[in-house]
Image (cartoon, rainbow, N blue to C red; front, side, top):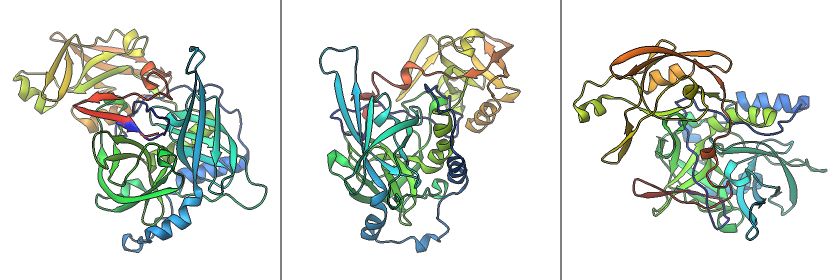
Amino acid sequence: MRSTDNCGQTAIVFLARARRRGLFIAWPRPPRSRPRWMQALLMAIALIPGASALAAEECSQSIADLYESKSPAVVLITALTINPYRMEDRVRQTTGSGFIIDAQGLVMTNSHVVFGAQAVSVTLDDGTTLPAKLLGADPIFDLAILQIPEPEHGQLPVLVFGDSDAVRPGEGVVAIGNPMGLDQTITSGIVSAINRVLPERPALLARPMIQTDAPINPGNSGGPILNRCGDVIGIATEILDNAQNIGFAIPSNLARSAVSSLVEKGRLIRPWFGVDGSLIDARLREIFALPLTEGLLVEAVEPNSPASIAGILGGRLPVKIGTRSLILGGDVVVAINDIALKDVESLQRALETIRIGTRARLTVFRQGKTFASELEIIERPLQPGDVPESSQSFSTRQDRGKDIDKVR
Protein backbone atom coordinates (compact mmCIF):
# COMPACT_ATOMS: atom_id res chain seq x y z
CA MET A 1 0.00 0.00 0.00
CA ARG A 2 1.43 3.34 -0.99
CA SER A 3 1.42 6.39 1.22
CA THR A 4 0.30 9.55 -0.46
CA ASP A 5 3.12 11.93 0.26
CA ASN A 6 4.95 13.04 -2.85
CA CYS A 7 8.68 12.53 -2.25
CA GLY A 8 9.32 10.10 -5.10
CA GLN A 9 9.32 7.38 -2.49
CA THR A 10 6.82 6.14 0.08
CA ALA A 11 6.81 4.62 3.53
CA ILE A 12 5.18 1.51 4.91
CA VAL A 13 1.66 2.04 6.16
CA PHE A 14 0.88 2.05 9.84
CA LEU A 15 -2.35 0.18 10.59
CA ALA A 16 -4.14 -0.11 13.90
CA ARG A 17 -7.53 -1.69 14.50
CA ALA A 18 -9.85 0.81 16.16
CA ARG A 19 -11.95 -1.87 17.77
CA ARG A 20 -8.88 -3.28 19.45
CA ARG A 21 -6.99 -1.14 21.88
CA GLY A 22 -3.72 0.16 20.46
CA LEU A 23 -0.35 0.59 22.12
CA PHE A 24 0.93 4.18 22.24
CA ILE A 25 4.36 5.63 21.57
CA ALA A 26 6.56 8.21 23.21
CA TRP A 27 7.24 11.60 21.64
CA PRO A 28 10.15 13.79 22.71
CA ARG A 29 9.86 17.20 24.34
CA PRO A 30 6.07 17.44 24.88
CA PRO A 31 4.63 20.94 25.17
CA ARG A 32 4.61 22.02 28.82
CA SER A 33 1.51 24.15 28.82
CA ARG A 34 -1.22 25.49 26.57
CA PRO A 35 -3.14 28.76 26.74
CA ARG A 36 -6.74 28.64 27.89
CA TRP A 37 -8.09 29.29 24.42
CA MET A 38 -6.39 26.12 23.23
CA GLN A 39 -7.73 24.10 26.15
CA ALA A 40 -11.26 25.22 25.28
CA LEU A 41 -10.64 24.56 21.60
CA LEU A 42 -9.39 21.04 22.20
CA MET A 43 -12.43 20.25 24.30
CA ALA A 44 -14.68 21.54 21.53
CA ILE A 45 -12.88 19.51 18.88
CA ALA A 46 -13.12 16.36 20.99
CA LEU A 47 -16.78 16.71 21.91
CA ILE A 48 -18.52 18.30 18.91
CA PRO A 49 -19.03 15.74 16.13
CA GLY A 50 -19.07 18.16 13.24
CA ALA A 51 -21.88 20.08 11.63
CA SER A 52 -23.61 17.06 10.17
CA ALA A 53 -26.96 17.69 11.74
CA LEU A 54 -28.32 17.98 8.23
CA ALA A 55 -30.26 14.99 7.05
CA ALA A 56 -28.46 12.81 4.53
CA GLU A 57 -30.71 13.98 1.73
CA GLU A 58 -29.76 17.59 2.45
CA CYS A 59 -26.04 16.87 2.10
CA SER A 60 -25.96 17.31 -1.62
CA GLN A 61 -23.70 20.27 -2.30
CA SER A 62 -22.29 20.24 -5.79
CA ILE A 63 -18.65 19.31 -6.13
CA ALA A 64 -17.94 22.78 -7.47
CA ASP A 65 -19.53 24.37 -4.40
CA LEU A 66 -17.62 22.04 -2.08
CA TYR A 67 -14.35 22.95 -3.74
CA GLU A 68 -15.04 26.66 -3.57
CA SER A 69 -16.02 26.62 0.09
CA LYS A 70 -13.67 23.96 1.51
CA SER A 71 -10.43 24.05 -0.49
CA PRO A 72 -9.18 27.28 1.17
CA ALA A 73 -8.69 25.27 4.40
CA VAL A 74 -6.54 22.63 2.65
CA VAL A 75 -2.79 23.27 2.76
CA LEU A 76 0.39 22.04 1.12
CA ILE A 77 2.98 20.69 3.59
CA THR A 78 6.68 20.56 2.82
CA ALA A 79 9.02 18.66 5.15
CA LEU A 80 12.81 18.69 5.01
CA THR A 81 14.62 15.68 6.44
CA ILE A 82 18.38 15.33 6.85
CA ASN A 83 19.92 11.93 7.49
CA PRO A 84 23.03 12.48 9.64
CA TYR A 85 24.26 8.94 8.98
CA ARG A 86 24.76 9.39 5.25
CA MET A 87 27.39 11.28 3.31
CA GLU A 88 25.35 11.29 0.09
CA ASP A 89 21.64 11.75 -0.50
CA ARG A 90 21.37 13.15 3.00
CA VAL A 91 18.62 15.64 2.27
CA ARG A 92 15.08 14.66 1.36
CA GLN A 93 12.15 16.95 0.74
CA THR A 94 8.69 15.53 1.15
CA THR A 95 5.39 17.13 0.23
CA GLY A 96 1.94 16.19 1.40
CA SER A 97 -1.40 17.68 2.31
CA GLY A 98 -3.13 18.80 5.46
CA PHE A 99 -6.08 20.87 6.60
CA ILE A 100 -6.69 23.58 9.17
CA ILE A 101 -8.88 22.44 12.08
CA ASP A 102 -9.10 25.71 14.01
CA ALA A 103 -8.67 29.43 13.36
CA GLN A 104 -5.71 29.63 15.77
CA GLY A 105 -3.55 27.64 13.39
CA LEU A 106 -3.77 23.92 14.20
CA VAL A 107 -3.22 21.78 11.10
CA MET A 108 -3.84 18.04 10.86
CA THR A 109 -1.84 15.80 8.55
CA ASN A 110 -0.29 12.33 8.42
CA SER A 111 2.58 11.43 10.69
CA HIS A 112 4.51 9.90 7.80
CA VAL A 113 4.59 13.28 6.07
CA VAL A 114 6.33 15.14 8.92
CA PHE A 115 7.69 12.61 11.43
CA GLY A 116 11.43 13.08 11.91
CA ALA A 117 11.57 16.22 9.75
CA GLN A 118 14.09 18.91 10.61
CA ALA A 119 12.00 21.71 9.11
CA VAL A 120 8.33 21.89 8.12
CA SER A 121 6.49 24.61 6.21
CA VAL A 122 2.85 25.07 5.29
CA THR A 123 1.62 26.81 2.14
CA LEU A 124 -1.88 28.26 2.36
CA ASP A 125 -4.46 28.47 -0.39
CA ASP A 126 -3.43 32.05 -1.19
CA GLY A 127 0.19 31.00 -1.73
CA THR A 128 1.51 32.25 1.62
CA THR A 129 4.20 29.94 3.02
CA LEU A 130 4.54 29.78 6.80
CA PRO A 131 6.91 27.97 9.14
CA ALA A 132 5.21 25.19 11.07
CA LYS A 133 5.95 23.63 14.44
CA LEU A 134 5.27 19.95 14.97
CA LEU A 135 3.24 19.71 18.17
CA GLY A 136 2.77 15.95 18.17
CA ALA A 137 2.66 12.85 16.01
CA ASP A 138 1.62 9.23 16.28
CA PRO A 139 3.10 6.90 13.64
CA ILE A 140 0.77 4.06 14.60
CA PHE A 141 -2.42 5.97 13.80
CA ASP A 142 -0.47 8.00 11.21
CA LEU A 143 -1.68 11.33 12.58
CA ALA A 144 0.15 14.58 13.33
CA ILE A 145 -0.72 18.11 14.43
CA LEU A 146 1.18 21.21 13.29
CA GLN A 147 0.98 24.78 14.56
CA ILE A 148 1.20 27.72 12.17
CA PRO A 149 1.09 31.42 13.07
CA GLU A 150 -2.25 33.20 13.12
CA PRO A 151 -2.66 35.81 10.38
CA GLU A 152 -2.30 39.45 11.34
CA HIS A 153 -5.47 40.26 9.45
CA GLY A 154 -8.53 38.14 8.85
CA GLN A 155 -9.09 34.57 10.03
CA LEU A 156 -7.89 31.20 8.87
CA PRO A 157 -10.52 29.03 7.15
CA VAL A 158 -11.21 25.73 8.91
CA LEU A 159 -12.75 22.35 8.20
CA VAL A 160 -15.08 20.56 10.61
CA PHE A 161 -14.94 16.90 11.58
CA GLY A 162 -18.00 14.84 10.69
CA ASP A 163 -19.15 11.58 12.27
CA SER A 164 -17.30 8.73 10.56
CA ASP A 165 -19.42 6.18 12.43
CA ALA A 166 -22.40 7.38 10.41
CA VAL A 167 -20.69 6.83 7.05
CA ARG A 168 -22.28 4.21 4.79
CA PRO A 169 -20.91 2.48 1.69
CA GLY A 170 -22.18 4.17 -1.44
CA GLU A 171 -22.21 7.69 -0.05
CA GLY A 172 -20.56 10.35 -2.18
CA VAL A 173 -17.23 11.82 -1.06
CA VAL A 174 -14.55 14.14 -2.39
CA ALA A 175 -10.81 14.32 -1.73
CA ILE A 176 -8.92 17.61 -1.77
CA GLY A 177 -5.14 17.72 -1.71
CA ASN A 178 -1.92 18.21 -3.60
CA PRO A 179 -1.32 15.05 -5.65
CA MET A 180 2.00 14.90 -7.49
CA GLY A 181 2.65 18.50 -6.49
CA LEU A 182 -0.48 19.75 -8.23
CA ASP A 183 -1.93 22.01 -5.56
CA GLN A 184 -5.60 22.24 -4.65
CA THR A 185 -6.87 19.28 -6.67
CA ILE A 186 -10.32 17.82 -6.03
CA THR A 187 -11.47 14.34 -7.00
CA SER A 188 -14.76 12.60 -6.30
CA GLY A 189 -16.06 9.13 -5.70
CA ILE A 190 -17.97 7.08 -3.15
CA VAL A 191 -17.31 5.27 0.10
CA SER A 192 -16.48 1.81 -1.21
CA ALA A 193 -16.36 0.06 2.17
CA ILE A 194 -16.07 0.74 5.89
CA ASN A 195 -14.22 -1.08 8.67
CA ARG A 196 -11.65 -2.22 6.14
CA VAL A 197 -8.80 -3.81 8.10
CA LEU A 198 -5.60 -4.29 6.15
CA PRO A 199 -3.39 -7.14 7.34
CA GLU A 200 -0.09 -5.32 7.57
CA ARG A 201 0.13 -4.58 11.27
CA PRO A 202 0.00 -6.90 14.27
CA ALA A 203 -3.52 -7.72 15.37
CA LEU A 204 -3.31 -5.55 18.47
CA LEU A 205 -2.21 -2.54 16.40
CA ALA A 206 -4.71 -2.76 13.57
CA ARG A 207 -7.52 -0.29 12.98
CA PRO A 208 -10.41 -0.21 10.50
CA MET A 209 -10.18 2.21 7.60
CA ILE A 210 -12.63 3.85 5.24
CA GLN A 211 -12.14 2.63 1.68
CA THR A 212 -12.93 5.00 -1.18
CA ASP A 213 -12.65 5.04 -4.96
CA ALA A 214 -12.14 8.81 -5.01
CA PRO A 215 -8.74 9.05 -6.76
CA ILE A 216 -5.92 9.82 -4.32
CA ASN A 217 -2.28 9.86 -5.33
CA PRO A 218 1.18 10.65 -3.96
CA GLY A 219 0.87 14.12 -2.43
CA ASN A 220 -2.64 13.54 -1.05
CA SER A 221 -1.39 12.20 2.30
CA GLY A 222 -2.97 14.06 5.20
CA GLY A 223 -5.61 15.69 3.05
CA PRO A 224 -9.31 15.56 3.91
CA ILE A 225 -11.96 13.20 2.60
CA LEU A 226 -15.23 15.13 2.74
CA ASN A 227 -18.84 14.03 2.61
CA ARG A 228 -21.34 15.95 0.53
CA CYS A 229 -22.09 18.15 3.54
CA GLY A 230 -18.49 19.32 3.46
CA ASP A 231 -17.52 17.65 6.74
CA VAL A 232 -14.26 15.72 7.13
CA ILE A 233 -15.07 12.03 7.48
CA GLY A 234 -11.57 10.74 6.82
CA ILE A 235 -7.91 11.63 6.33
CA ALA A 236 -6.26 10.24 3.17
CA THR A 237 -3.35 8.02 4.14
CA GLU A 238 -2.68 5.18 1.68
CA ILE A 239 -3.53 3.49 -1.59
CA LEU A 240 -3.41 -0.05 -2.88
CA ASP A 241 -0.66 -0.25 -5.45
CA ASN A 242 -1.25 -2.00 -8.77
CA ALA A 243 -4.96 -1.20 -8.45
CA GLN A 244 -7.28 1.47 -9.74
CA ASN A 245 -8.80 3.90 -7.24
CA ILE A 246 -8.56 1.78 -4.11
CA GLY A 247 -7.65 4.26 -1.39
CA PHE A 248 -7.98 4.33 2.37
CA ALA A 249 -8.67 7.03 4.94
CA ILE A 250 -8.30 7.26 8.70
CA PRO A 251 -11.82 7.69 10.19
CA SER A 252 -12.51 11.22 11.41
CA ASN A 253 -13.73 10.06 14.83
CA LEU A 254 -10.37 8.42 15.48
CA ALA A 255 -8.54 11.54 14.27
CA ARG A 256 -10.67 13.88 16.38
CA SER A 257 -10.13 11.80 19.51
CA ALA A 258 -6.35 12.07 19.08
CA VAL A 259 -6.12 15.87 18.76
CA SER A 260 -6.06 16.75 22.47
CA SER A 261 -3.30 14.30 23.40
CA LEU A 262 -1.18 15.17 20.37
CA VAL A 263 -1.36 18.88 21.16
CA GLU A 264 -0.99 18.71 24.93
CA LYS A 265 1.39 15.76 25.31
CA GLY A 266 3.01 15.55 21.89
CA ARG A 267 2.08 11.88 21.60
CA LEU A 268 -0.64 9.33 22.21
CA ILE A 269 -0.18 7.34 25.40
CA ARG A 270 -0.87 3.62 25.23
CA PRO A 271 -0.40 0.87 27.79
CA TRP A 272 2.17 -1.72 26.70
CA PHE A 273 1.12 -5.35 26.57
CA GLY A 274 3.86 -6.50 24.24
CA VAL A 275 2.47 -9.43 22.26
CA ASP A 276 1.28 -10.08 18.74
CA GLY A 277 -0.97 -12.96 17.89
CA SER A 278 -4.18 -14.32 16.43
CA LEU A 279 -7.43 -15.30 18.01
CA ILE A 280 -8.10 -19.02 17.84
CA ASP A 281 -11.49 -19.04 16.22
CA ALA A 282 -13.80 -21.74 14.90
CA ARG A 283 -12.17 -21.57 11.47
CA LEU A 284 -8.74 -22.36 12.87
CA ARG A 285 -10.08 -25.23 14.94
CA GLU A 286 -11.81 -26.63 11.86
CA ILE A 287 -8.67 -26.37 9.74
CA PHE A 288 -6.41 -28.10 12.25
CA ALA A 289 -9.09 -30.59 13.38
CA LEU A 290 -7.64 -30.31 16.88
CA PRO A 291 -9.17 -29.43 20.25
CA LEU A 292 -7.45 -26.01 20.33
CA THR A 293 -7.96 -23.88 23.41
CA GLU A 294 -9.90 -20.66 22.82
CA GLY A 295 -7.88 -17.50 23.32
CA LEU A 296 -5.15 -15.35 21.81
CA LEU A 297 -2.40 -17.42 20.23
CA VAL A 298 0.85 -15.59 21.03
CA GLU A 299 2.98 -15.52 17.88
CA ALA A 300 5.57 -12.90 18.85
CA VAL A 301 6.67 -11.15 22.05
CA GLU A 302 8.28 -7.70 21.93
CA PRO A 303 11.70 -7.55 23.65
CA ASN A 304 11.73 -6.02 27.15
CA SER A 305 7.95 -5.71 27.13
CA PRO A 306 5.76 -6.57 30.12
CA ALA A 307 4.84 -9.86 28.42
CA SER A 308 8.52 -10.69 27.85
CA ILE A 309 9.42 -9.88 31.46
CA ALA A 310 6.54 -12.08 32.68
CA GLY A 311 7.89 -15.01 30.64
CA ILE A 312 5.15 -15.23 27.99
CA LEU A 313 6.40 -17.31 25.06
CA GLY A 314 5.92 -16.67 21.35
CA GLY A 315 5.66 -19.21 18.54
CA ARG A 316 8.42 -21.07 16.74
CA LEU A 317 6.72 -22.89 13.85
CA PRO A 318 5.70 -20.69 10.90
CA VAL A 319 2.84 -22.07 8.82
CA LYS A 320 0.76 -20.67 5.98
CA ILE A 321 -2.86 -21.63 5.41
CA GLY A 322 -4.03 -20.18 2.11
CA THR A 323 -3.26 -16.48 2.43
CA ARG A 324 -3.12 -16.59 6.22
CA SER A 325 0.24 -16.84 7.98
CA LEU A 326 0.60 -18.06 11.56
CA ILE A 327 3.40 -18.90 13.96
CA LEU A 328 2.45 -21.87 16.09
CA GLY A 329 3.91 -23.22 19.32
CA GLY A 330 3.49 -20.17 21.55
CA ASP A 331 1.40 -19.62 24.63
CA VAL A 332 -2.35 -19.11 24.41
CA VAL A 333 -3.71 -16.26 26.52
CA VAL A 334 -7.08 -17.64 27.59
CA ALA A 335 -8.23 -14.62 29.64
CA ILE A 336 -7.14 -11.10 30.59
CA ASN A 337 -8.38 -9.70 33.91
CA ASP A 338 -10.85 -12.62 34.13
CA ILE A 339 -12.38 -11.81 30.72
CA ALA A 340 -12.30 -14.91 28.51
CA LEU A 341 -10.91 -14.21 25.02
CA LYS A 342 -13.42 -15.83 22.69
CA ASP A 343 -13.83 -13.25 19.92
CA VAL A 344 -12.81 -9.76 18.83
CA GLU A 345 -15.37 -8.12 21.10
CA SER A 346 -14.18 -9.92 24.23
CA LEU A 347 -10.56 -9.14 23.34
CA GLN A 348 -11.48 -5.48 23.00
CA ARG A 349 -13.22 -5.46 26.38
CA ALA A 350 -10.26 -7.14 28.01
CA LEU A 351 -7.70 -4.74 26.54
CA GLU A 352 -9.79 -1.77 27.66
CA THR A 353 -9.26 -2.88 31.27
CA ILE A 354 -5.47 -2.52 30.96
CA ARG A 355 -4.14 0.68 32.52
CA ILE A 356 -0.64 2.08 32.87
CA GLY A 357 0.68 1.57 36.39
CA THR A 358 -1.55 -1.42 37.13
CA ARG A 359 -1.03 -5.16 36.95
CA ALA A 360 -2.88 -7.21 34.35
CA ARG A 361 -3.91 -10.75 35.31
CA LEU A 362 -3.48 -13.36 32.58
CA THR A 363 -4.69 -16.91 32.34
CA VAL A 364 -2.23 -18.74 30.08
CA PHE A 365 -2.34 -22.17 28.44
CA ARG A 366 1.00 -23.84 27.70
CA GLN A 367 1.72 -27.46 26.80
CA GLY A 368 -1.51 -28.81 28.20
CA LYS A 369 -1.44 -26.83 31.43
CA THR A 370 -3.11 -23.60 32.50
CA PHE A 371 -1.44 -21.15 34.85
CA ALA A 372 -1.83 -17.55 36.02
CA SER A 373 0.58 -14.72 35.30
CA GLU A 374 0.70 -11.00 36.00
CA LEU A 375 2.06 -8.16 33.87
CA GLU A 376 3.25 -4.80 35.17
CA ILE A 377 1.78 -2.38 32.61
CA ILE A 378 3.87 0.59 31.51
CA GLU A 379 3.63 3.12 28.68
CA ARG A 380 4.53 1.71 25.30
CA PRO A 381 7.73 3.24 23.89
CA LEU A 382 8.46 3.83 20.23
CA GLN A 383 9.30 0.52 18.56
CA PRO A 384 11.52 0.02 15.48
CA GLY A 385 8.59 -1.26 13.43
CA ASP A 386 6.50 1.83 14.16
CA VAL A 387 8.67 3.92 11.84
CA PRO A 388 10.02 1.43 9.28
CA GLU A 389 13.43 2.28 7.81
CA SER A 390 12.85 6.05 7.82
CA SER A 391 9.66 8.01 8.21
CA GLN A 392 10.55 9.79 4.98
CA SER A 393 11.57 6.80 2.89
CA PHE A 394 9.71 5.17 0.03
CA SER A 395 9.38 1.48 0.75
CA THR A 396 7.00 -1.11 -0.60
CA ARG A 397 5.87 -4.05 1.43
CA GLN A 398 4.53 -7.18 -0.19
CA ASP A 399 1.36 -8.44 1.44
CA ARG A 400 -0.78 -11.23 0.03
CA GLY A 401 0.46 -10.52 -3.44
CA LYS A 402 -0.31 -6.80 -3.27
CA ASP A 403 1.87 -3.78 -2.66
CA ILE A 404 0.74 -1.61 0.23
CA ASP A 405 2.33 1.82 0.15
CA LYS A 406 1.94 5.20 1.75
CA VAL A 407 0.57 7.99 -0.38
CA ARG A 408 2.68 11.00 0.51
